[in-house]
Amino acid sequence: MDDPTLTAQYAQSGDLMDLCNNEAWLRESAQVEDGVQVEAGLPMREYSQTVTALTSEQNQQLRQQMKVQSILFTALRQWMESWDLGAGFDDTYAVARRLIRHHLANPTETQLATIDSLLAGRVESGNMNPSTGKQAVLLLAEMFAQEDWQAMAEAASHSISSRVLSAGKI
Image (cartoon, rainbow, N blue to C red):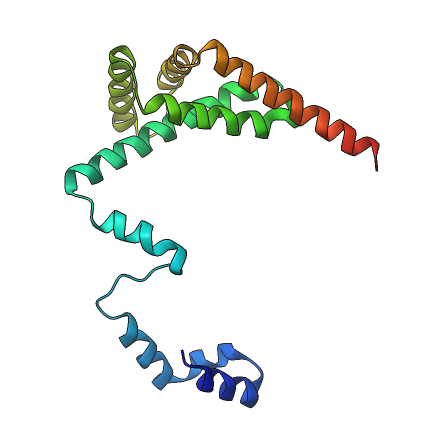
């Protein structure tokens, strides 16, 4: 939209959204977008170009990766809720998610077999059944190394102590 049109509209009604009631403006705006990929601003341009350049095989792999993460993140949340972390939950969960993504970049053969099984179970039921959840937690427990557990413990400890300190200053 050009500045003079916006300026005129604002001067006329004081509300730029009134342009949505102008049929000529709506048609002109629609023509600008006709036949092109509409983005959510310039920061999304590179991502949009990357996604549209994917082959169908790459697209399938990306979908599988998202499904695996969805299954694992859901199981992780349920598992971690049983740990009763209180104020430390969010930060610890964020660290654990980052670690899962890191481990999924280079899974072992055993982990790949479990992931295939998780995906098969997910497809059959449409949602996570208790068996799939247990299998996912076992995979997570196998995935996390001693350093990972330490990183999660530190995140929880730091988060809880920060909240206690900030609460004491109120």
